Image (cartoon, rainbow, N blue to C red; front, side):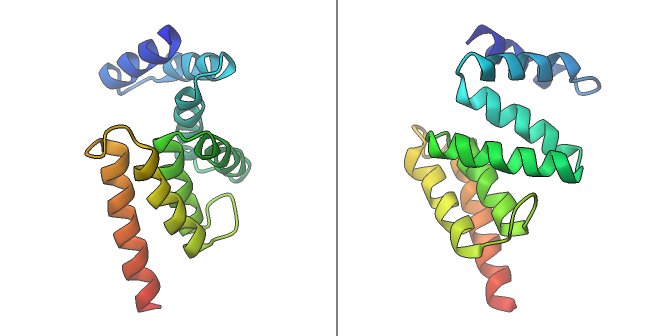
Length: 128
């Protein structure tokens, strides 16, 4: 828990260099903190490298399967866009619904972002 929360503090206060936060997220993931895995994968996804995108997408699948709200939100994003995995609107929407279903705080950031992405994906899929 300490590695995870310290990584969050560093990332919130140091917008320039997140290398230390990434190491701490990785360590928290290795120690069983699922949200640490999700945050590490999100940082990898931000690099927008094909191999990294595949790794991040797989990590989001795993963290969502373990009921991590942000993992499900991020899985919905990558499924909806086809980043690192095959695009699937139905699976993306289901993942985004799950993000709110498993969230303790239904008004929290993960659920709010999931709802925003859900609406965006629905709009864009209807216009195609």
